Image 1 (cartoon, rainbow, N blue to C red):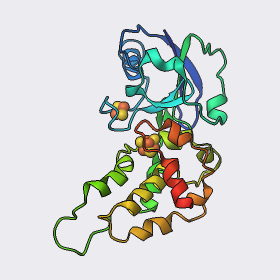
Image 2: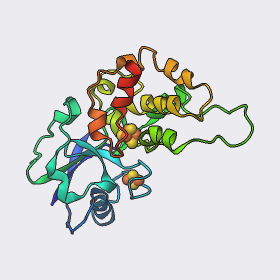
Image 3: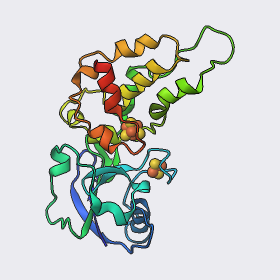
Image 4: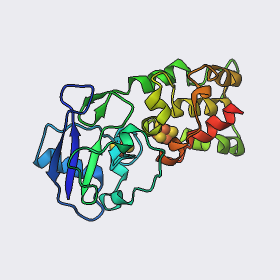
Amino acid sequence: MIFRIARCREGGKITHYDQYKVQIHKGMTVLDALFQIQDKMDPSLSFRYSCRGAVCGSCAMLIDKEPRLACRTQVSTIKENDMNLKPFHHLTYSPEGWDSESEVLIEPLPNFPVLKDLVVDMTKFYDALDKLKLWADPSTEEGPRAQSPEDRKKIERYVNCILCAICYGSCPVNHEQEKYLGPAALAKAWRFNQDTRTPNQERYLNDVQIAYGVPMCDLVMNCVKACPKGVAPGGAIKKMKS
Ligand code: SF4
Ligand code: FES
C-alpha cells in the first residue's frame, strides 16, 4: 500500500509530500508502517511515539484526514473514515496527486506549528494547562484524601485523558482562534472542579470563564467524536457553560 506522508524540514508548515510503498501484514498499525518506512526506506522521517499502546498520547497525527493515534489505528480500518467531523481547512485540503481510494495520507496534527515532518510544537497545548493551574492545590488537612467509589466514578472519564491533543487538533475553534485554551484543558478544569478531594473546587470553574476559555467554545463537538479515550471534553464544556 502507498503511504503519502507530509514532510517539513525547515519548521512551520508542510513543504511537500513523499510516497512510500509499505508491505502490509495482518494487524499492522499506522505506527508499524511508519517504523517500516523509517527502518527500510527513509531514516530521515520524523514522528513521535513512546508506549505503542495508546497510553502516552505521543503519536497523534492526521490519518486520511482524521486525527488519530498512529499506534491504535490499524491500517486495515483507515478507509472506514467514520468520525464525521465538522470540516475546516486541514480536514478538507487535498494535496495534489493524492488518490484517496488507494493511498493512505499521513499529515501532522492540525492547529499546531510543525517542527519536522509529523512532529508538532505542543507548547500552546501545555501552556493552557499551566495557565489554568490544572492540578490539585495542597490540602491543609492531615492524612490521605479519601474518595468514595461513587465520587470517583463521576470524574473517571476525565481522569482517562492522555494529553494526546487530538481534541485540540480536531477543533475548528482552535483552528480559528490562536488564544482558545482548547477542549482538553477545559475538560481538566471540570475534572478538578468535580473532584471531591480538591481544595478550592470553585477556582477551576471561575478561571475558565475568561474570554478565550469556556465562552469561546461553539459546542461543535469534534473533540467528543475524535477523542481516543472517550473523555468527551465537549460534554464537560457544555456543563460549565450552563
Ligand atoms: S481529551 Fe481526549 S483527545 Fe483531548 S487530550 Fe485528552 S485524551 Fe486526547
Ligand atoms: S505511542 Fe503512546 S499513544 Fe501511541
